[in-house]
Image (spheres, rainbow over the protein chains, first blue to last red):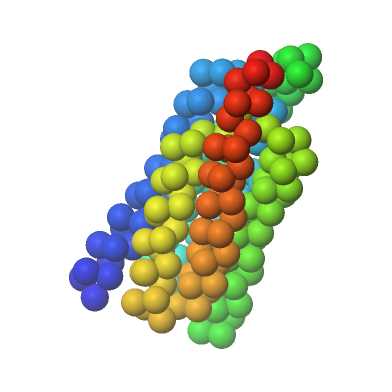
Length: 91
Length: 91
């Protein structure tokens, strides 16, 4: 059981951490043209449900991972909205 | 417990389904400039670990959701590689 929890933590670390290079790339390039807004919205809402699921199971990996991801994807939605004009002008 | 599992299924449906509009947008526009390759690789590898985690817990929502997501993100990695030359030429 211990090993399974470590596995969950490491999986959560990777899938949640995955958003970091995306957040940095989007902030650096100031472009979010090729990011699907629907993907970001569905991810954000879905991860909110995973968070509730994790809380109801008392599953710490799910809780930590999804809280962080929600923050990152909300940030990406904000940047996509903010860079929308520049994106339309670019290509 | 039943309700918790339905919640998990719905959460998995949303976060896994979230990849669909991204796959379609990338295929339609033939551009993946603004997608971080690191994000896609980390997601793919992390979801493989979530899949193992789900299997070890016998958690069906985790198993189904992550299998589908792995397929989608592998497809996106393939498209990002394939459209790389076009992406560099465009902007």
